[in-house]
Image (cartoon, rainbow, N blue to C red; front, side):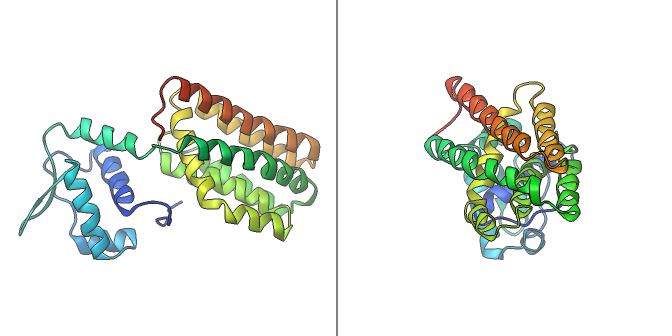
Length: 242
């Protein structure tokens, strides 16, 4: 499942995530030359001007070195520590907004799960199941994980077949994706949380598939409560928040 850059993501973050993933899997090594601007622009579906701006940010953070007339290269000095440091900066979050979004999700999504259990069609259930399949492959792929996680929750809203609920979820969708991304990143630092979170989603799906509306609502409430509790624990232990 490939994603297009979202409006909430800065271009440099999109490019940085690609560079870090390529560095981690061995495609890029210290001293490697990046593809030309034209190729990067096509790959990320952005303008060449945006690519240049992104490269300037990455250069100022010591991730790349721009050699005029020669190209852009991964810096060789302490690159892993720089990548790790910049990676964590991508997960800074407004703690107040995060908890406000969890409160909104508790109200909206619990009710969506309740109604979806009564109205979901076979097509709705298939969408959810496919998200779960993709989510199960995402233990070591943060981008795939948060995209499929947020998509799963959106499909539950769609399964209500209530245009108002769907529009409400769409209104907050980008903020939801951001908070899901941050929550997954910090929550999964604790061993076993990936599988626990996946199981929570599977249980919600099963309750909806079995048309057990009360159970679906209860499980969604428990899921969001677990997220809130985990984020509170991480915050106490020193999560980087604004």
